[in-house]
Image (cartoon, rainbow, N blue to C red; front, side, top):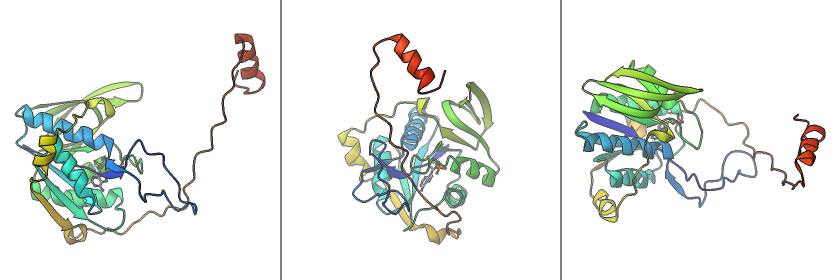
Length: 249
Ligand code: AMP
């Protein structure tokens, strides 16, 4: 079974986000970019399934800037076998990403597509669900555990207030939650090996999918600055402040 893992190049999660002065978006100039953390977990899970003999090949794909080659090489250093880069010079929205992935699924015929549950730049949490609907495949989102057994997969999903166990018939779509695994650090020999792994680069527009944006960002704003805290001298004073000033009691 082949596993397809879409990986997005996003602003590194440790970077303090700067909103552009005109409110049109987030400043990405000279900002560290990395693989979306949920996608790193997806790659790790796919590689573990291959190591356990349950997958034959792990193929990663990234859609966007040519610089996403770095993201694909990182995935290969974790253990992915092969990469595909679909270049496009503007951001590609989740629906268009899902439609491009449909084309790649038709080409590659994977038994499982493991995506991140969301990209931390847009927090959309849409692509896996849209891909599942477009393909008519079963899906399990926010996977905290994934067990493959023959032609089915059992996924424990994190849902509000608990866990839900789902059995999916393969091929299927799974999206990852943070607790699914702890991705390994790529070793230097594996980083060097990754440079030689096959990478197929194409223009996203060559796949015959409408990539025009359907969404318009009207304004991006910083969250209100947090007020600095104060120290109180007693529980009584704390309760009085919560009651009279914060009015939360
Ligand atoms: P989103 O729906 O945008 O929150 O993204 C959910 C998941 O879809 C991500 O964690 C990735 O696995 C995948 N994805 C979204 N955008 C891209 C992209 N441009 N390239 C590759 N994978 C993507």
